[in-house]
Length: 175
Image (cartoon, rainbow, N blue to C red; front, side, top):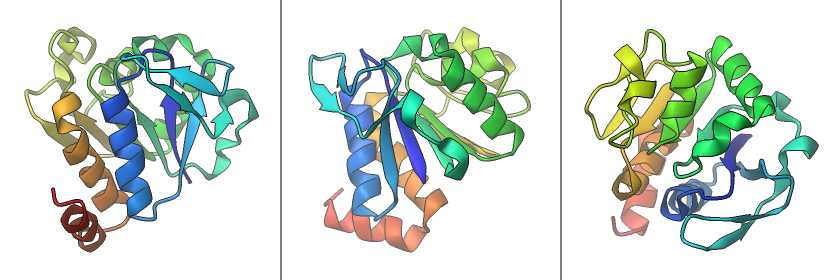
């Protein structure tokens, strides 16, 4: 199972594009609220009903953890931070886009890896920062911002499935 974490203020295009394209690829993906409420409000006032609350989820089957940007408070959820660190220690997959790679940088998850992020958040990535659009480094996938949401999702699909499935979704979506 794969999980995408939503907090109030998340970037809708980054979350919804990723959710939509992964589900079109038949990749199991659960939306998780870190707010304690199943309804989460995005940065542009779009409300999304999540599949599960963080407190009610069992992440023992987690293959990939995904962080959309916009919700720069994700680092304030200690349980999520602990999960990300443990997941990384097992070399399991983590993906983050826009401002969300800053969460990984703050946790030390990016040490020895390269990553990108939305302009203005580079300081949180430290030596890991590189000026790329979508960067894959070891078990981490990062992307620069909202305009790269589909590219980010296709990179995840290639990692979780394969390039043939990514190409099929790519073609069907007329991307």
